[in-house]
Every structure is written in structure tokens, then in C-alpha cells.
Length: 68
Image (tube, rainbow, N blue to C red; front, side):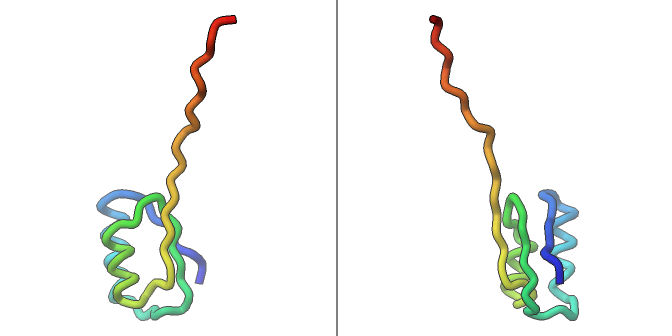
């Protein structure tokens, strides 16, 4: 099965939690998201998800310019 990508809000969290009752068991499903929410933790606890990873990239800070 393809990886799951979820958004960050109540609807996405509710959809993920709703997958706990699905017929999919640990078949190698992974999740990629910016924030690991309760829904993903529920899927991990239920054995429906093999792995979840979170990554958020912040803008790079520029050094203050100095006058010439």
C-alpha cells in the first residue's frame, strides 16, 4: 500500500483515527507528516501502521548584512 500523508487539523486527525477499525493490519504502511498527531499514534498502537515520521523545515535565517 502507498504511504499515507496527512494534514494538520481536526479533520485529518479524525480520518486517521477512523482507520483504526479498518481491515488493514500491519502490511507495511508508513506515514509522512509534519506533525505526529493522536490519530497516527492510535494507528501505531493498533498495529495498522508500521512507521510514522515527522519533518518540518524552517526557513533559513540570513546573517545580518553589514555596511561596506
